[in-house]
Length: 504
Ligand code: ADP
View 1 (cartoon, protein in one colour):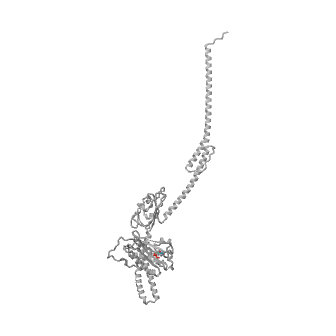
View 2: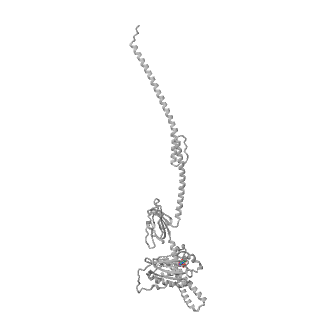
View 3: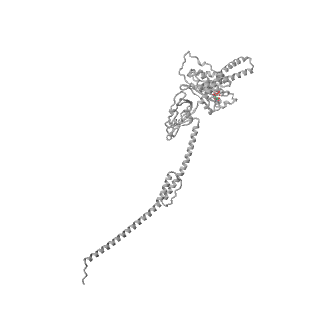
């Protein structure tokens, strides 16, 4: 049987249906794909969000609070412990931060306490320095003032704020007693290396400070360089002791002593004169007791005259009015004369006086009257402080441009600790004050002897091995450059002394 043939119309229908089916399936597939994609995307989004939330909770929040803590910590506003429990590196970091914070806050508290202590120490020091009555100035290595206390400002006469950073030499001028201007290198020494020993400037004599207002003050100055200064930039410390008031008081005292001794000298001279006449007259007329009384009055008056004369000379020395008139002086002759004058006093104590001179002794340049005072003082001291039967040796030797004279005894000697004070005013060794020793000194003789020798540009000194070991006094005088005197030159060696030596 033959298949039924298809009509063309029938063929198209099948095709159309097939296309529709295919398209429908395709769109279905596409829809499914689209939904799948959507679901997938949503799933990804959900996962990402969950991850993000996890990150936020796990990392960002702790990091944020760590950051907050760090800011507080930087600003020094916290001393709390930072507590994060994330169980990871962030917790470790937070712990480390907390530890650092704790250490720092402890260090800070300690530092603040130390700072308070330092400030209070600084204030204490500043108060002490400002209340010291001596003036204190500190300068840096360039001699610019970095500290001046109130007393220094009073001397300088300039307010504190104007003095700081000023050069020392522009603020003060210092002169010595000869009016020589001292340079700052002299009075403000600087040690540039730490190994240097501190340099000192401490003149024996007061110096005169002239300030910018031209006001002068007598001051005793001590300055010392500061060691180890290079980093600290400290140059030198100057200490001024203002002597203006003391000097004025001393001047008043010296004036009084000078006036009193002048006034006492005149009646004493007539007392001594009349007593001498009385003693002479009484030689034949007086009883032994009367003679004894007159001799005692005479001795006491002579001692009083020596004291008055010494006081007058001391006041002259202090006022700078003690003058000498140096001439070429036959020194061998002068020494012989001094020994002769003291022989009687020595003989009364059975002390031998030995003069030992070189064959030739040059003339010295000296004031004969003053030098005789020195010799009498040294020889009579040797007699006074040597027990009966002792030996006193007087000798002279030629040095370089000078003649050195020695007066040595085997008497009481001088303790080592007394030697530095021996030539100062009113100084007497304790044993000399012992009333039983019958010594009636004033403690002025050696002071005056030193002043006289120094006025001659000489030196005086003493050596003693100690108590009861005797002593030797030395003094030097310049050799006269004029060896021969003109024939008509007056014989000054025979000029009488102001006051005769006291007989024991
Ligand atoms: P004074 O009037 O007391 O003798 P000086 O100034 O002459 O005054 O002497 C001061 C002191 O030095 C004396 O008091 C004495 O203690 C001591 N002195 C001086 N010369 C001698 C000496 N040759 N031996 C021992 N001591 C002496």
